[in-house]
Length: 446
Image (cartoon, rainbow, N blue to C red; front, top):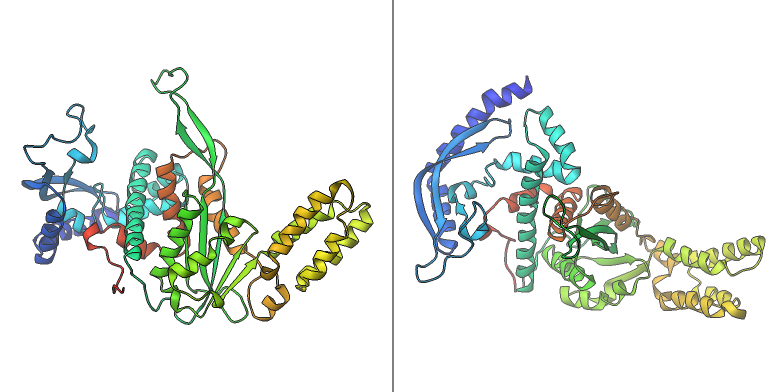
């Protein structure tokens, strides 16, 4: 009954509203503004019939103005002339009124959000089955096209936000007076890369190389006075296939966007990777924060793993267990000087060089391992939030047997999935469905 009511009652009503919206002065003014913002866009038809799918699963025909991109006659027309659809964006038409109303790829905003949400959460086949229960019949290829189109628009919005923060925008109020934790780390997925070598298959295509790539993630969340993640508190996260520098550019942009310069305290957690800690001073300076108000913490459990590696060089099972127990006790209490002396006592014989390498880890990060002091101040000792982010954003959707991704598709999907799992989907979708010239980050500030 719900499906039939949506298809027979709600969809026709929405279709009527969609057609009436074409006559609204505000919509027409915004559509004209959008048409003027696109270079060489010329009106072709005033009344073009377009078929649009609605949330209830039915398809309706809407009459809307149609524009086509026409370059100057003296210039060579962009794109290839032959084959339908081969000219790509250069020869694509446009429906300004539909774009202003959030209708892209001939589906309504509500249906686009639902399809993209299901496509980001699980496989496209699962999304197709879930929509079929609601009476929306879309095959996996259609869902893939709609999801990727939605995700690419979201990625374009992120790039626009990045440019705005580079121009000097800084948000205010979102984390004012709050204690925030910032964590970064990397995961693993397999990327599909074309190859020109080898024989062509029956399909006419050559094979591809599936190389491992390390997508990097960051998470920003709010903690209370006891160092616990505040329930229903502020959370932002994102992921990218860019290198470490690219990740920290995105992180700095997000921190400026949320007004992190007004936060009461920053706590940065991570493992012992140098690519994280070497970039912290520049990150703090870029956002305009004080390094004295930043606490850096090496994840306690990563430090214990390094201790376990050093303990392997202690001869005897019982002695090894006793040594590791004592080392853990010193580590948890923050007695790093005593711990380093304990490790130095093992630097004898042919394994001395390997043990000194483990010793250097604790010497270099001694100021980030004051765990007894951190616990007293209500600072988290672990990076469980960012590890969970890697598992939920990357592993549960993009990593698996025989799963290979094109770089551009995986980048867009990573970003969309991060927004969904951080509880930021509604705001993200509203921005992604708007034309670029109507995007906004709020009050600009130099």
